[in-house]
Length: 112
Length: 113
Image (cartoon, rainbow over all chains, first blue to last red):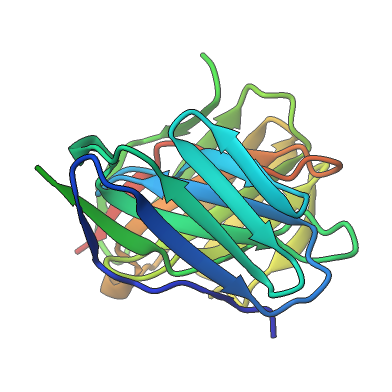
């Protein structure tokens, strides 16, 4: 059973702080990892993907992958109220499958 | 048109009606997906098509019937739905090989009365 676990939150951070969102996965050997942002009533939007161990930075967002510990994180620096949304972690299993398993998502609230 | 489009955006139907949801992707992708998202629940994968062939069917009731006439278009035919089928129905597409990130359409908000 492939599992992707996320704390449902809500995670509440003040404006300007660093928000740290975590995701663990059960399928060792998974190759591709994605973070999606979903505003209330809207569809998910891809914001980051990472394939290799280590950090990947894109603007205020940093994805961190640790395959040995089977977790992937998303850091949002200088959090803004507009970052308030649900963040979905998705993991593609090994073997070249393009069908991801999604976590339940973490709700982030950035308060002024 | 760019990205992934879905029509209609909102749909209200009675339990005896028949309707269809349409999805079109303009990204040159090979794989297309239907997801259901109910209030306060995670995404539920319903169907996956790769190169117009169904590769996944996640125990979805037969009142939902997918159709993929070509790699750019995906339909979800609905008949004799139940009130618990009210949800946001999302279409997504991906390359299917090599890069797996999915791009979602705006969704169809379905209400079954």
